[in-house]
Image (cartoon, rainbow, N blue to C red):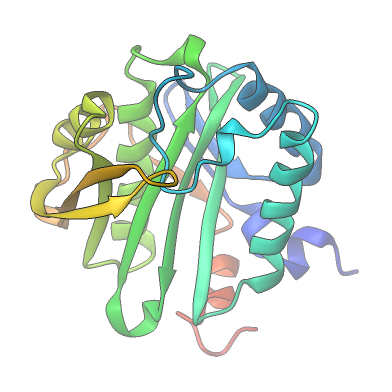
Length: 220
């Protein structure tokens, strides 16, 4: 019998590495994750995201959050996909780690992005969850490189990237909020530069997800 997970294998992905777990964002996780975001991800006078979604009013943000993730699921195809995973640390839901890409079957490249609730920042979780996702992409999705980027006034994110093994790859000038100039530091990671998490990665649901994104053409 078809289930939501078998129809959309993204939801069946689950990685574990020591105290860390990453899993597909099923509907039952959307509300708790939105609550973490409403409680705060960053200081009110800063903006670490390219799209300032986190500044939406508390009564609006949960709806926006759910609609975004539903739209990403609906648009998923081998040509364009976003792998967004809920992050749990010692069993506690703490944030989201993702990777998005276009034309992956040709480029074998994706860009990482993530967020953590403020109460869980500065504890090494952000580094670990990026290490695990990048290891998954290299080991199980045949990635050849992974990109990322952070505003130059976001030293915490840039520090995580350095710890994971990313190298600087140029800068860009962008409009962050209306009328506000910001500089993005682009970053590039290759398999040989990846600094792996101290705990080994175990992944479930890999075969079905590979088929979903076209890596195994005899499926989906």
